[in-house]
Length: 251
Image (cartoon, rainbow, N blue to C red; front, top):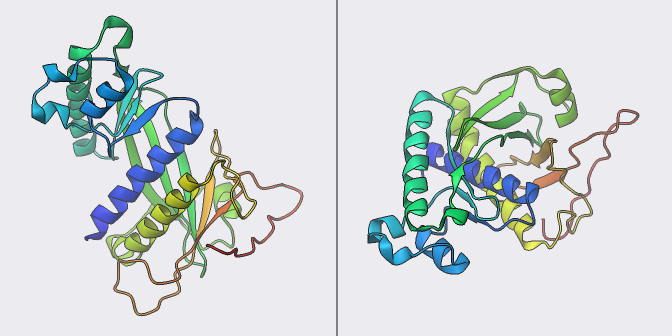
């Protein structure tokens, strides 16, 4: 799979995952579920009024509790245009079947960032997203200008530059696969405080990861065997450097 698809899928999954952790009490569907299932399970509209194509539409984030919807796209003009069109289409389809009290709106004010640190000291990558246009959450990848020993140092410096296409090709697949593994592992846990005893503070803070890029003969753009993602506390203590996390069974 090309690195663009790997990294795009990982971006969607990380952003959707963070949304769910910010609103844990809400009923939220993602793009692995279609509109027909949402309407059936939540009993908020008559799915039989929709065509088969409309029934199979899959919004990126559908928050049934808050009655809002988001599309996740890359941060560029094409992403904004496609996201706006798709969000409006999904809203029209959902609201055509819904009672007035169940009508959805375009979501607003969803933003955040995640820092990703390579264990061997490469630049620290940042995934950033914001919702400046209702219903469209745009994401953008950058990296630290310099090499930093920790995510905390990179975050404090706040000097981010564009990632070259060569770097994206070389590391994009690793970042994507390791991020997916982190999300899958976290989704299996009953709380954000995981088996290794470290919580990711995801409410208004930065979730930090560490990715090992030790190679084992894998193809460029795919995660090598043994690639790890260790969640870091997102708010480092100013009085002392963050403690080094031990590797744990199952990681």
